[in-house]
Image (cartoon, one colour):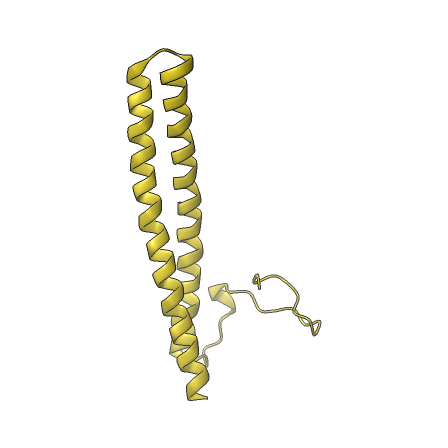
Amino acid sequence: MPTNAKPAHGKRERKLYRKEWEETDNPLVNEARQQTLALQRLQTWMRLAYAGIAAGALLAYWGFTQGNNVVAGVVGVIVAVIFFAIAMVFRIGIRNGRKNVNAMLEHLEASQ
């Protein structure tokens, strides 16, 4: 559920902004919140990497077919491959981060 969506019972869910955190929160809850915020930032960077892949693919397409410029086509392929590698690193980090946050939350549920 997104952080700003209304739950079924009508109360608004608390957002994950740091200034709204309470001092009495469990340190594990604070760590889960911080990691969730970091994952959201990584997702933004991953979207930018996807845009880089698209830009490289368009440059490659233009270079090889429309512009008859092999150099631009090769540069486009290289750019697309680099951004693909960057996107995969972000994807793996996001996947592992979500597993970590879920493990922390399961540990909190088990300890209560």
